[in-house]
Amino acid sequence: MQIRSSRGKAPKYAKEFHYLSDRIRIIAPYHLDVSIDQGVDLKLSLDLDRELGRIVCRHLSVSRVAKGTEITGTELRDIAIATLVRLGGDEMIKVRGTDGRWVPLSGAGLAFAPAQGRDRADVVADAAVIYAVSSLTERSPLLLVAHRLGVSQSTATRLVSTARRDGLLSDG
Image 1 (cartoon, rainbow, N blue to C red):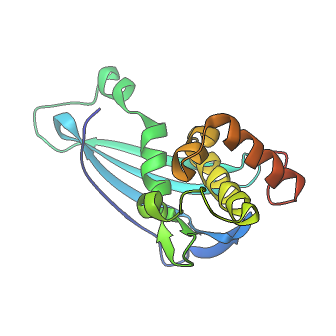
Image 2 (image 1 turned 135 degrees about the vertical axis):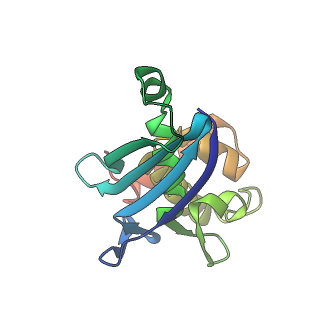
């Protein structure tokens, strides 16, 4: 599946709220329109499922815009819904980075300062936020913590354990 274009927006009735931390805000529900290869257009309705603890697809519609074509099982099998949920989640979720600015998850790559030379409590708090949002969008949380903070995966594991112990993350 090759994404050619995407456009998302929150409907008028959507709500923005803090989730899991005062450093994570989510707007939900969220609608995402995506054009993929071979003239297939998708419309997704995304929402936060609090029971599952992640962003989920509640509704998906598929259409072919070109005449003389049809939707087949091949096109349906090629739709990577998890990839599209992550794409929408990147816009639904905002995080407050190390410097205090709010940024969408899609731009959060540089929102967290490297761990080296920083106060451990601040690094643990950042690790908790990174872990929580990566779990919401079904990414590899420990790997992302390690990458964003510039630490090894074993150090990331210890930071997340400390965050759990300190009540910054739930056990779920």
